[in-house]
Image (cartoon, rainbow, N blue to C red; front, side):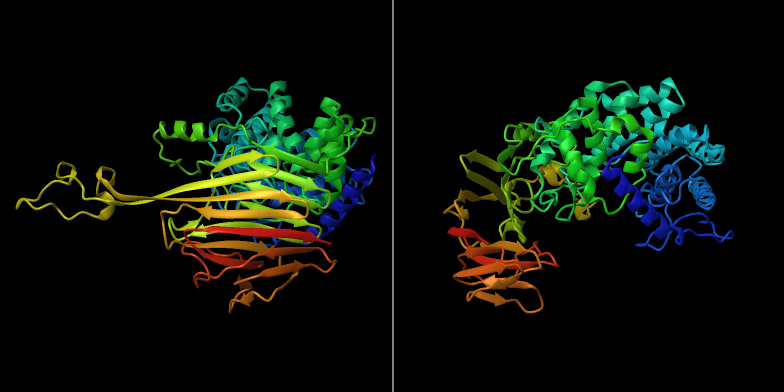
Amino acid sequence: MDSIYQRLVQLNDQLVTLSLDLQIKDSASRNVGGIIDSFTGLPHPSHVGTGAVIAKWTAALCSPESAFYRDNQLLANLELALQYMLNRQHSDGTITLGSTNYHSPPDTGFVVIGFAQLYELLVQQCVEHPAFEKAASLLALFLKRATPAMLEGGCHTPNHRWILTAALGLLNRSFPDPALVARANAWLAEGIDITADGEWTERSNGIYNAVSDIALYHTALSLDRPELLESVRSNLRMMQYLVHPSGEVVTDYSGRQDYGQPSDMSGYFLTYRLMASYDRDPLFAALSDYAGPFYKQFFSVTDHPLIGYLLYPEQMDISHLERASLPDQYVKVINGQHPIHEDLQQMKKLGHQLHITHSSAHTAFGAPLVRVRNGQTSATVMTNAPSFFSLRHGSANLLAVKVSTAFTPGVVSFDQFQAEDGHYKLGKRMYKGYNGPIPKGSLPPLKADGVTAAAPWYLLPHGERETTHLQEHIIESELTQTADGWDIHLYSDKVQEDVMTQLTFIFAKDGKLSGEGLEAIAGSSNYFLKQGSCRFETADGSAIELTSGAFEHWMPSVRDDSHPVGCQSVIVNLVAPIDNRFSIRLSS
């Protein structure tokens, strides 16, 4: 076995040891057999709760190199945990996530994907080790109970559809039923939600890209739909450009909970490995090698890598494949040609007015962005996101640059984009007006005395109001890469005056800010840059220098905006009309 496998076995054994004391053994508890979650203090029958621990224990029991290989005590613990899962499975076949999502078909689907593979693995192992038969039968019972929820259940988010298709396909692999295939095909008939450049709807490089990738892989293989793998390939190719020099994944514009959160490539390892084998692809092989060493934890039963090695040994062995060189010098425009504005216009014709029950419209799908990498320097230019620029230079991290305004009010999310030879222009047109009285013919019924009945504000037909005094405000930003950094030109229209505006540079906490123009804001880790320059420097000498400051109003934050905690924010206060230039210079 390869060195990554050996490391994963060692890591898994460590995690198994840590988890054993967290299992509830009190037979009087309704949660007997569950594994306590270290965050909530409760066990949860989810793919990231007890389900994830079940995957770790199964992997250890089935790995010959593990210290727990076929350990009778661990097997007894596993059987008790599986019984907990059955006890906490609702009568409709679903489980509850724990943090939210009650009686949840998609969260049950996450568990089904993992348990279906554990079931296949233990059935294979039973040939030589019949002691696994009870655990296999408990898994089979859970899967059969969950089947009605997979056949009838709905979803919340875009990626949930592919979780359900993967669950349906894997169920069908062990327990064939035409109804499972039909339900999967009903979801697949909606079409695959990915751009030509490989970005999924939720723009979630830290979590849900990888979730969609492995789910579509299982869907394609289990349902004999190889054409679905093209979407997986597309995202896996895109991800080579969305990694900072440190190995941290770009989450600066995510549409989900990984927004701005540290993340690495480990979640992509299993899919890269399987697709490298399927396509005999040197790039995927190299990216799999790169991703594997980042594992520090196995978060989900859905994609435990050791289960992949044990269940698909031939596919996971890619030692015979060549490795491509991974890029560290590039300028990559992603979604530059995606018709996002045409899509949004089409959306207006559908009539849902951005209200999708129990979900989000994800209108940033297909928004353009640019990734620029030059060795140890990594920059991202973004649209349709809370910030429009971020930069990593060695260990010095400029996490975000955002602009906010009192006009709308709040953070400006640029939605116009142009790119040409290292020069990027972003723009936003904002509108704000006022509403006239409701026309008499549209008012609620009159009372007997002819006076309009008093009505709650929310019962009035607001769509009938005439708009008055509609105002427009335009803000644009031009970013230009230079030999030693970046220039930012921020400007607005000349019509709207006295609009308080704020440009904020958000730095990581693990560096020192200095500069004569800096003034600390009491009670926070934020600073005004009133004039001149400031410098952000880390312990190894990596530095980012910012020029120049302004202090045209006194607001520490613009209305409907707030600055993140755990960071250091450098704030430049401006008043429209704006025409200001800023330089970011890098040094080591």
